[in-house]
Length: 287
Image 1 (cartoon, rainbow, N blue to C red):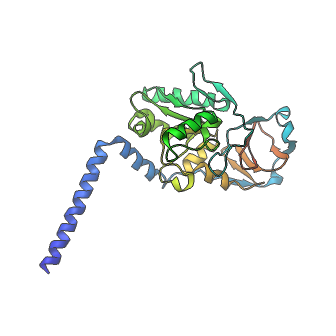
Image 2 (image 1 turned 90 degrees about the vertical axis):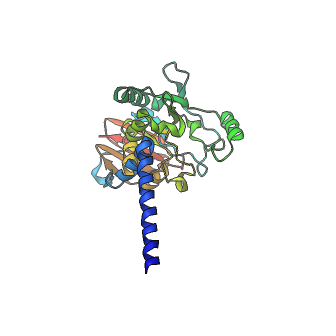
Image 3 (image 1 turned 180 degrees about the vertical axis):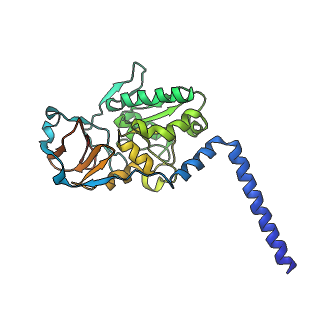
């Protein structure tokens, strides 16, 4: 009887010490507190798409070769690139230098990154810098040789070759340390409002095949970035959720994923079409 009571007291003491130790660690580590807060937010945040009947929309059938001539913006914003969906051999990224900074990334992301970096400065007083952006296949191969497959993707399987992926940092904080900064926490909490997502989230390696990288942001454009962020999805899960040929509505946007040589484009004030690198196209129309 006394022995069982003693064991129970020891177990309770150990549990108490573990709780106290965890509390001390959280008190000392702002990055861990932020991660816990983000995980708790998964319980309340959501951004559900509503399916829209095709016959309720004013649609125009446009051949892929005529999209730009018919008023559509064609870009590469929603390409998914990983080991299962490598880049085609003839792929050419739409790369431009960002504000004479020396950093080159995809042209469709320039305005959004400018807005995000300005918001970081306004809200935190810190500057957001780019450590790595566009890479050629040869540069990706060099990184793979240097770092190994545990931390680098093979050429053709890296989003950096699209210019849509950016590794960012702020003064004194890079890599996992980025989350210890106000800038890092702002980016991880709010980048979805500016067209970006955290491409490799915590606990999603089974889907992305990449460990958690809070410094690696990926441009997908609005409203997709907001949906992915609020639903705490990966890009893989989001694109898979868009059924071919169906139309969805979210916050004043119509979204559709289609295949074929001719696409059904809804009427709207802005019409964006991106290949998905899975044999289809994703249409985003602002009503």
